Image (tube, rainbow, N blue to C red; front, top):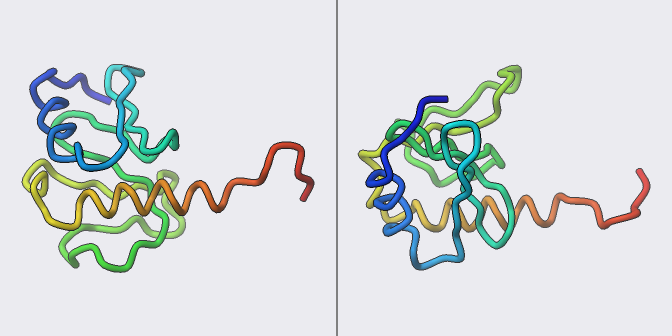
Length: 107
């Protein structure tokens, strides 16, 4: 993944400030967390959001195919102020929390 400028990270974080998000520098980009859940990556000028089956994203946002090695939705910087963006990040965190097995669970 390519390195990003601090200004781009700051812009993404500003538009997501209504929800509990943080970012941690990793591998030359930033891992995006929401409510403590890793929900995606900010790199170059895009947000790669984990695919969790959200059905309200615009059609022009490409979804990964089931057989793609990386199951992430690439959201270009052009969508930084989209009204659905914060909801998508929050919903991704909520779905990931629900899908995690409790510590010590078998199965």
